[in-house]
Picture 1 (cartoon, rainbow, N blue to C red):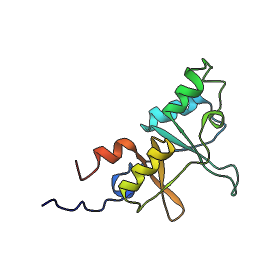
Picture 2 (picture 1 turned 180 degrees about the vertical axis):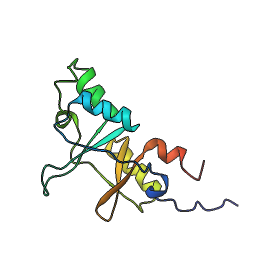
Picture 3 (picture 1 turned 135 degrees about the vertical axis):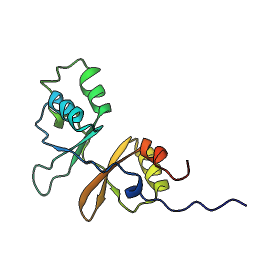
Picture 4 (picture 1 turned 60 degrees about the vertical axis):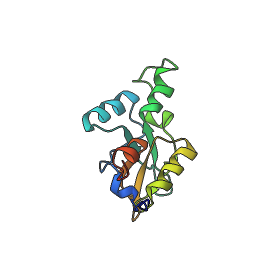
Length: 133
């Protein structure tokens, strides 16, 4: 008889590092920060309390800088980011995290708990950090 899968939350599989950046930073500065911090995404700060956070991932640099052959020192992060950043509740079951990311076409998203971003979860995390594998 098969054993029922146990619950695993986004918080349990996420990467704990979250790096914030100003949207006015250039694409070049964003990549330099990603290299320095060893992260694959940056959270773009809100401009004011009613604003939403943005997110910029490697895919955005490919789509917004490399493919259109633009200068990374002339493009600001706010021009290539996705906004609003879709966040994942910390206690959401990984099954639903996977479904949400796939349904909206995202590779990764910030994990939110008590109104704060506490980590990042990616499709890779869902496999590599999952108890089923």
